Length: 465
Image 1 (cartoon, rainbow, N blue to C red):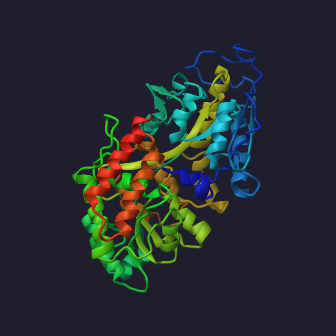
Image 2 (image 1 turned 90 degrees about the vertical axis):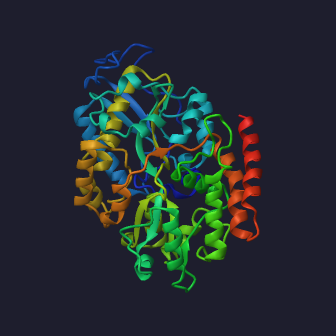
Image 3 (image 1 turned 180 degrees about the horizontal axis):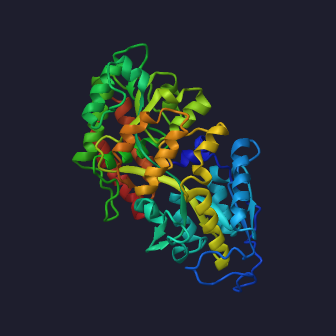
C-alpha cells in the first residue's frame, strides 16, 4: 500500500529525502539532440567517460530543514565529482511532491520530471503509461553497478516490465511482526523470539492483554484502505493470493476465512485486541509507542516514526518475520531516468545512483558518517543486498549502530520473499476494509458472507481495468 508514506510518513524514512520540483522542465545537458557530449560515447555498455560534460537535474535533494541529510548530499556530490569532474548535479528540493500522488501524476503528464526522478515501486506502471522513463537495461551492468549481482532479484524485478529495467532501488521494505519488547518481557515472553505462526500470535496476545491497564496484545487496521492492505499482507504470509493469476479475486477460500476467523477470535473470544477499533495508520504506532500495544504488522520504518515523531526509544522495539512466512508484502522506492535522456545522461545518472544509493560503504551506506551526524543507524532497511555485499553492509552497520541491531535478528535471520501489491491495489484494499472493520466491530459478523460480498465487489473492480 504505502500511500500513507507519501502523506504521513515520508519524514520517517531512514533516507529522509525530500521531494522535487514540478517547475522543472525537460532535461538539461550539454548534448545536442542525439549527439553525445564531448568525451562521451553512445556505447551503452561502456562506463561514463570522466571527460563527458553532463548536467543532471535530480529530485529529492534534502531540504534545508534536514540539515544533516543536506550536508551529506553536498559531501557526496563533492566526492562524486572527484571521479566525474564534468558532471554537474543540479539537486532539487520542493516539499510535497513525493508526498502527494496528484503532483506526481501531474508532473508525468506535463513531462516536467527532472532527468533523474524519485518514484515508489508501485509508480512504475503509471510512469510507463505516460512514457516517462528510459529503458536502462543496457546501461546497468557489473561494470557500472559493481554490486549488481548482490541486489535482490525480487527488488530489481519490481522495476522491470517485459524484461526491461526502468529504475534502480534506493530503499525497500518487507513487512514483519513488530513487537514491544517491554510488554513481551512483562508478559513472560521472549522478545528475541517473536511469534512465527498465527496460533503463536494469538497465544502471545492473550498473555500481553492479561497485563491489564488498557494494554492490547495485537492491533489491526480497518479503515482508509489500511485494513485491506494488512489483510493482503496476512494472505501473502499464509501463502495465499488476493488477486489470482486469472485476474480475479482469490481470497474467498479456506485461507481467507482463516484470517477472518482468527481476528474474530482474538477480538471477541480473547479480548486481546482492545475495544477501540476502526483504526488507521498512525493509531497503532501511538499505542505501541505509549506501551499500550504488544504487536502489529509493520515495516521497519514504523520504528523510526515512533522514535522521531512520538518520542519512543529504539531499544523498546524488535521485529520478527511475518507469521506464516510464505511471502510478505514488499515495497520501496528508487529513481528512474527521464525518457529522451542522452546516452551520457543515462550513464551519469547510473554512476551517481551507484555511488549514492547502491555502493556498500558509500553514500547512504556510510554509517559512520550517519552516526556522527546524529542520524539513525541499525534499522533492517534498506535490505536489498544479498551475498558478500550484505555481509559487508551488515558488518559496517553493526559497527556504527545507534540502536540494538540484535532486536531485529529474528527478522533478518528468517528472510521472507517479498511480493508486490495486487493490481488495482487501493480499490481492492478499500473493499477489504469492509471485511476487516465488520469482523472487528460486529461480534455477529458472518465471515463467509463478508468474504463472498467482498469477492463480488473486487471482481467488479478488476473487471473495470
